[in-house]
Image (tube, rainbow, N blue to C red; front, side):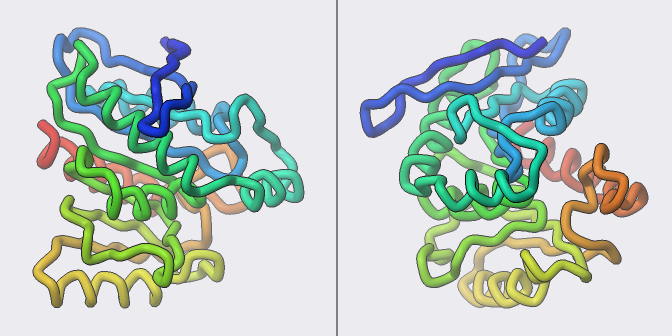
Length: 225
C-alpha cells in the first residue's frame, strides 16, 4: 500500500516520501500529510491509510530524510534541527507532485499534526496549490509568517489543555483572518496535546479524535472533491 516516492523540489533538490492511493478510485482528491515531531513513522502511515480509505490520494514527505524516533528527547532534537525553508520547499513540491499525479483529480489539501500542524499552517501562506488546510494542534510563529497570504479555507483542531499549541493563539489568528475576509474554522476540544494520536494511550482522547476526524473528512471532500 505504501509506495516510496521521489520528487524534485522547487529549489532543484530531490525529496523523498511515501504515497498511498485509494482503491477503486481512478482520480482522487489529494492530500499532503505532514508528520509529527517523531518523523515518518507507523502512526503517520496509519493516518495516511485512513485517508486513503476515505478516498484520498496521500503523499507523506519525509522531512527528516529517513530518520525517526520514539524517544521524546531525540524527537525534540530532530524538530529543532529541521530547516524550515527546506521543509516548506519539500511540502510545496509534494503538493505540485500530487496536483500532476495521474491518480489525482488536481485538487490538493494539506493535513498536519503537532509539528506538522504548524508546518501545514505555514505552508498555507506559501503554497498556492493548497485548496484546504487542516492543522491539528500546531501553529507557526506569527512573526515569521504572513497569515494574510492564506488563500485556502482552514479547519483547525486545537486542545483546551495544550501549552505547546495554545488554542488562544489559534483563536487570535482566526479573528485576524476573519477581519480580512479569510476562511478559518476553529474547534477546541476538551483534551491535551496530541489527543488524536491513537498509539499514545496517555494522551489519546477517542471522542475528541473521532469528532475531529469526521469534521476533517467532510471538510476535505467539500473543498477537494
